[in-house]
Image (cartoon, rainbow, N blue to C red):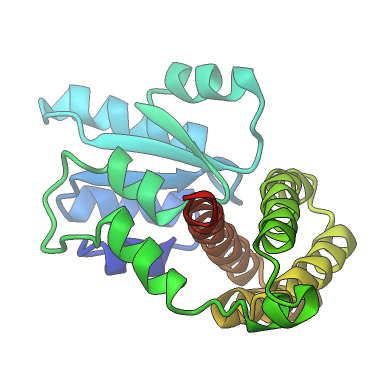
Length: 236
């Protein structure tokens, strides 16, 4: 999250728990507070209530408060709003979704367009192996690409589900399987993301794990767009 916010051009201050966060908020002006809902000492719900109470007591304009949690249950948003938050973000969050939610907050960064991202990823895949395997038969290539597309879309859903369940073994296995498909089209960036997620599944750093899951999900989304375009081009 810190890297994502910095990349989007925002000035970021990080604190270890809600109590430290409240102290920092009282001493410095902030446009946005993004708080993990479950923290030691003071959780995110308590932090939001304390900030709103201070704002009301001092006549300050309300800042934007966003919860951040892996608990993607429908009532979680209601709980966040009841505590005084404006909305709730769910882990992992893509750069695109984060930028959209903060669209009203000024920053010095202009993110690349979706077309630019897809074009960049398109340059990274190579269908030579498929052409050799099928002896250049376009119908066979199209069928294999369609199979890869379907598998990629299913794995995106499975990735987020496993992450929400904190299933590290399942995430590592999924990364290994996705890497196999990525090698078919030589998608180097996707392979790198899979390798990193497998490493982080064996570590103890929850923040790095979240970043790795988010990076893999974004790269899989880019592959979905590219494969869709390649399949459409093969029909023309």
